[in-house]
Length: 153
Image (cartoon, rainbow, N blue to C red; front, side, top):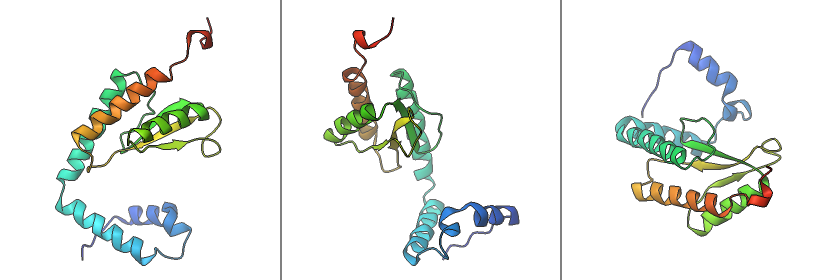
């Protein structure tokens, strides 16, 4: 079994702020086993993290080229702020129809006007997955762009 040691300050932080620890008396055994296995994989296969970091950078660069309204994030979760709940749902449905699964986060989970797509990248995604995602987002952007009469002068 893989064992990890941490500074006392880190241990105390996890005790105070780790939601699964705070809101339950203990982790369910399945979650604990899965977490340990994930840590073992992480230690044995560092190339996964390198690949994920590269995907995040490439996604953000592609989103910038498309002028997509990304929220600042260097994690695998990339929020795309669309503002309106109906717009978020339209984009999510269109992407789902293309085989691209993204979360549609809207009120009351986020404040009014802060609806967003929750794009989650993983080391398991390939280059073609990233390209398909960016193409899908570009198509949504073109399809759901405000019409001239909707834009204030």
